[in-house]
Image (cartoon, rainbow, N blue to C red; front, side, top):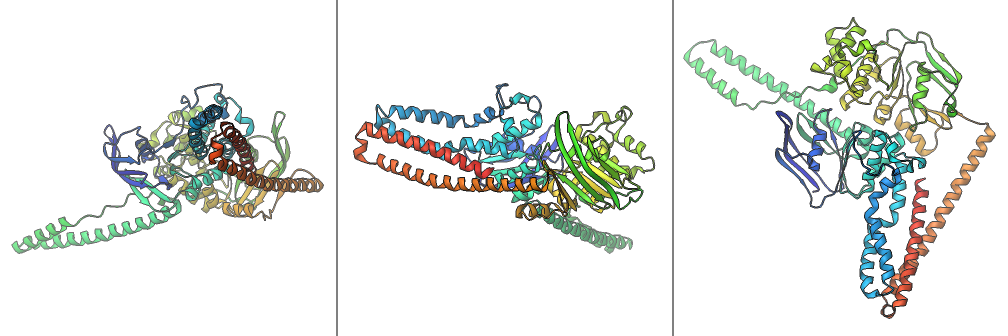
Length: 633
């Protein structure tokens, strides 16, 4: 057992945050901590790290447990003391103990020339420790994590002070992954990562030698990484021994049983109450005695609690006011850039009524710019766009700007004034689907956070009656329940949807078509995200539409060059593996010599063998680093 919470209670002032939280985490176990926003997930993390103390109950970690904690950084928080340090230098500090160990090894090598007997044992023990703690892999590990989390090589030497808040959080994640923690607490680790980086992080977590406890709204990520799901609901914890999809199914089944038990007991209670009422109506002494006896029996029945309201059952219906034509949008040879920096060119695509299309691609490739062009928000440098007949567009973008007039209104007023025919119940139902419940609907727009503004804008677009929805990251700032409500609405929507999302679970449930935007062009896959992955992994995709730069001759030459590079890479890997085997044999031979009594009696011979062994180990470390880089590239 690595971590255990037992009947933990926590309150802030008069407000109870947690009343009964119990769960265990074993070594190497990967678990998800889920629940609606405000349920207390981050509070659990603060209790585990010791930032908070439990009012009641126990939080216990195994002795000497090293905890790494990823939280969202505030603008004024720092993970770097030197403002001029580069990103690479900041992360290199993780290996400071190894570098000190390495410096001591070099000093011992020199000392062995004078006094080999005193230095040899310390050197040998330190060398084993240095190797076991990853001394030879530190550089390749650092580069691998930086690449995996989407930092380009140009950014490695960029001053850390120039990085945005999101980039700093990503750097903190890199730092945590490089440290040798026994338990990682990761709060929304996929924020600020593109799909490729998230997939890399999934592989890293699955192979991580320690335990991991995750908070995330990325359900696909949770499915791929967690084997246990812990839900915080109504200030209590419930443990499900499976991934997120298992949790959803099991919770639904448990809720159905609970609702059935409650309903059946209510029928029994009502029957007893009616019998008692009938007996009392007789007004005889015997009847009164019998009634009191039944009342006593009724009072002793242990009541089944009514199940909490199931927000997931809430439904949001999107109804276009008018049906569009079958041809919704056609774009041909679109070109865009800013200044002298080209972003993309020769982009062509076609959308039909009923298509649910996801645009995916690495960060910075131009996805948001492309949908802004398709929505008519900006003008491309070249190409043409043709819209179909009867098209009514609803565009949700990430910059959530309200007019000065709207800023002075409450959320409820903004929706009511925009859609005056809606009833109060209809407005409240829609706002509840986007996490505005109770008095939240009376918050002024001017006081809302960026995420809250986005949710208000989304609710307005959902009510607009558009038949073509263009959505840029619509699930950002939504909790798991709101995502499921939105998914259900978009699946049943009879119009057309074009969207960008990093939420692969959302893409998988909505998309009937994937458009992958790359530096070479755009490729269409007719299917959901799992289909796209299958085609990418088997390298047998037969795209319906591929638009790339250059002629067929250029494509042939490019393909031949790629094949040649791949062949040279394979040959280099094979050569490295053979050289490594030779070097390992030489190192083993040196170690055998150092065990020879005759050599040990000769200080110069010992020094010569150590010098040879050290040189071989440095060479093999470089070989290992190159081998790892070739496999990662």
